[in-house]
Image (tube, rainbow, N blue to C red):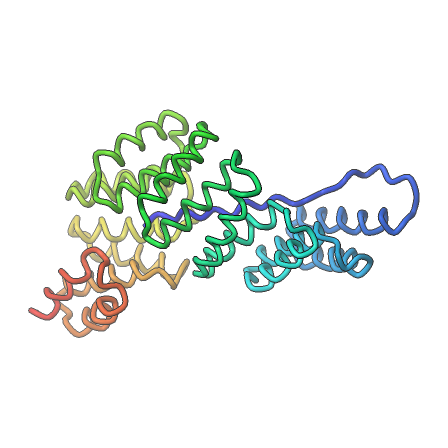
Length: 311
């Protein structure tokens, strides 16, 4: 499936024209040195400098914010949220910190905390597209699709050249099974940025639903050619190959996706489908029974569970 959460890492910097060796200038230099380490892809080294700045000023919101981004680079989301919360504590209207914490909450599945941050952002700046972007992401996760569409629409009006926002709208229409509306918006996104990989991945999913498996495969291969780091692209490619009677090749891509992201239930579903196609009832049930219990609304799960039981 398409992922919509994109972490926007923007380090906070400061001017370099320090006039004297004051505590203010010293902590500022630590911040800049930390930023340099981040540019060198050394988040651990960066955190040492940010911590030095915080040691000098325990209320230094920018240092907490940048330290939180360093934690993110190390996949330490809980620590990142803690530092972002401190940044917000000492600077309550810190827009970037609230935005990033909201994204972190979304990634952690803390949707109602993310919603609170999204509401704060709208209150702080209702003319910033990111306020509505994160609102749309939250409402999408909570399956409030009309509210998500409205939010993404507002974001798109404020940032009309951002193709991602159009793809997000198209994704909601896809969830609502409104393929005509989804394809129309994807056409608008294509006119802005034909090299947006998620656009091609979503188009592949629509082709698959229409049972046009060859075009689905072509579209997801285009997505992979534009971004080969997304596990769900490979999972989708594996699924389409299964339905093109290339089961072993499809399984290879599904397994590749699982190695990249073991938490995607759609890849487990696809393995269940593979085993149904191979006539392996025991293996198929190992995947599909649990998925049907945990994700009863997931497409194809009930259908292939019934087929597995009939083997």
